[in-house]
Image 1 (cartoon, rainbow, N blue to C red):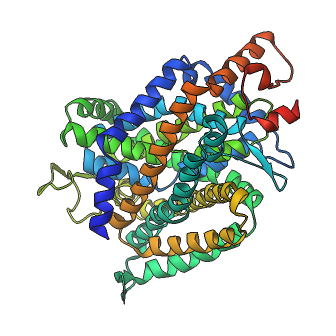
Image 2: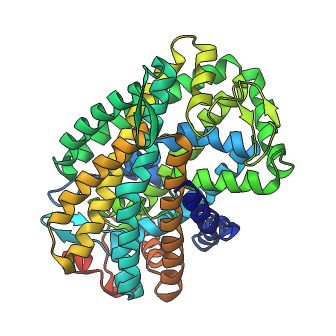
Amino acid sequence: MSELIQTLNSIIWSPALIYLCLGAGLFFSVITRFVQIRHFKEMWRLLMSGKSSEQGISSFQALAVSLSGRVGTGNIAGVAAAIGFGGPGAVFWMWVVAFFGAATAYIESTNAQIYKEEEDGLYRGGPAYYIEKAMGQKWYAWLFAISTILACGALLPVVQSNGIGDSLVNVFGDGGKVSTFIGDVALTKIYAAFFIVVILGFIIFGGVKRIANFTQVVVPFMALAYIIVACSIIALNLDMLPGIVSLIISDAFTPMAGVGAAIGWGVKRGVYSNEAGQGTGPHAAAAAEVDHPAQQGLVQAFSVYIDTLFVCSATAFMILITQQYNVIPEGAATALVQNVPLATEISGPAFTQLAVNSVLPGVGKPFIALALFFFAFTTVLAYFFIADNNISYINRTLKMPVLRFLLKVGIMTAVFYGTVSEPSAAWGLGDVGVGLMAWLNIVGIVIIFFMARPAIKALKDYERQQKEGVEKYTFDPESLGIKNADIWKDKK
């Protein structure tokens, strides 16, 4: 199984996908005239002004749901892995993919708003919907939907719950071990797995509104607490910060771990963390109640900044300032940099826990474990929401309600397995899931751009109304030459 996962990853995460992620972000940045910079002020205004409805959640709730998918294990363990395998320069490439990825996030999320549907009194949408309606290729939409159900219902939750289990072992020890069919498993992980699964079951059987209500409280609070601790550590070592930034930039172009390792790990973990182009964010974007599709596209673009430029950077600065990391390229026999014991797990949250603990002895490890619990748990909820959306899509044809029940059982099983498994196995499965979705979605939105340009038409229409100073924005898809946007057509 391990060899199969490694083989799949080597195919999916070939240099072609790395350059596709960067190239698509650069392309959409140029086409939108760098919407992520020009409309930064508007992003703030929209974030605070939206309201929910019976059919949809507010812009802030949609942001919270998508952030719960973005701010997760990738921000804590993923950044550590990028540094551990790719060197400090990998952080620079995480910044690059986030900056350009914000434009990609605008495109995919605006598409999701334009082509959303209403089902059982709730808005639903995402790549499967806009691929079918804008591209006209139902088979491709089904391929994405099935891949997303597999990725978000089985593969990606494994990574998130694994981070929780691994961080708890770093705090409490293994508590003894039990022999199982996957090898010796720490009792601490088993107890944690049961606890997480029980809470997860309670929430996911409560519906999407419960998910939105839970995430809009937990995500901002935990992210703020994490940022405060990180900023405190950085402030205590402020004199070192210029040198750390210089190290990141210099290592990006003359990387100690090799050019391929720095770019590859930076982009891979960057896409995993901020999800721009991956196709997960559009599902939450489609659920929002807004006056114009471009509004939610701008809000979702802003979430990429929050995730990578704030949270991921905070993690990277803590690790590098405190020098609680090793650099060991994959397959290397020796460490290029060794500051902590060689046995320290690179793929887990250990570097981050050691970094905080070096400044706050006795507090750092449990604090990171707590933060990771909330980040990872809400990410699993976001994954369920995304997989459920795609089951809704295929159920328009299959009409098999049992699929929703099977999804709930499947994601709870995946979470249990992920909590007790080894980090390397968990991340391998997660990378397969992310890569599959990224390939299908990015190719899809590029084709849709050349066929119909819906997100660009929406942006120009929104900017026109901005200049006219309208009191309430409206969206008329037919006047813009956008077909199959039935929700918006009915609204008008």
